[in-house]
Length: 465
Image 1 (cartoon, one colour):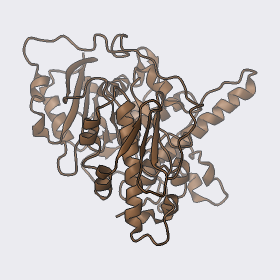
Image 2 (image 1 turned 90 degrees about the horizontal axis):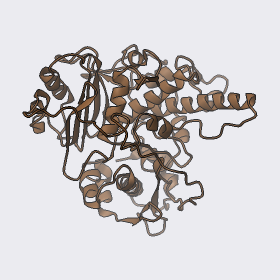
Image 3 (image 1 turned 45 degrees about the vertical axis):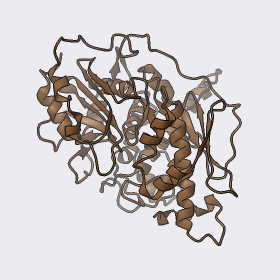
Image 4 (image 1 turned 30 degrees about the vertical axis):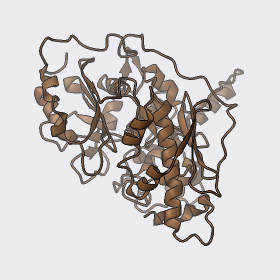
């Protein structure tokens, strides 16, 4: 049940006589989930069929909403790129809208469709460019017989879970590439918490440009009232899940944002301090969302300072993930926003297996992309150093990335981006290996990512080039 959502029940405009407020909220949240998931899966990347969306995206999800999600009907407007899902006769439908730059926005409960006057041009098509910027010549030489890496992954079922894509890059070339029926190199899936590692990457780019110092207090305007102890929390502590802030559930479910259409800023800034910053590890979506808010504020300040010194006003958003993605060929990666234009970079990013491999290659080369530095020197070391409080599980945590420092059989420099339902991007710089696995796992059937990585390391023929 979602009893912790009582403070936002007003969003649903529930009547006083509602017999079960939790059930009412679940239906409203379910409609938001169905609208958003359908919208993203239909139009991000190459898109998916409705049958595949029903099977993959709308099953094995949060148990409290799944029955409602399955029962509700999505009305799809192809021309307007809009999905509507009705959950009450006396309320407007839940709406998710798409554009070809940022993907989908799930509107708040009760919101009407928006005017499309702010529609912006989409993303470049770089497919014909050489790999890794594009897709030309992406595959390495194909030997007559199966390679050790291919043999190691010939039976994916032994690693558990339900794999939808597997991509292995060795020495910069694709050595293994497999997709489930209906998926291909341009099929985008939701990253879930792999988005947190993408957020850490965007923050690193901001550090390189001099916009933000992650060791300084986060630029969260709502915390600047004199006497607010949260003003001392640094962006780095947010990245390391060590803010000390209260979080409502383990993992910090962000249903009000993800499914309710709530504002990122309003939802995240409200939580009080519970522990001294930097002392306690507590995995929380809010920490990443707040770190991104700090980045946005810092880049806006830097942009305003540049404009003040120049007669030519530099227009455009202070934070533009799509522009960064396009620089490294991630043209089918969509960082989605809330109604106010704030990016939901804790979970709501859709991407392809090849785009995730491109991100991995950026880190394999320590932030240098085809001769141009896009992340600070040693940023890889920073995000993979467990300098803060650590989780109790089988993996360590850096700053937005998970570490294999507790896993036998894996090189010491192995690290990865992990997301719910089996989304993984693993980088092993010493082996020049990038491993991408996407899936539709559930709570009962999950991939053993450590076992998969161990098998690939054992099969790998050697270090480096």
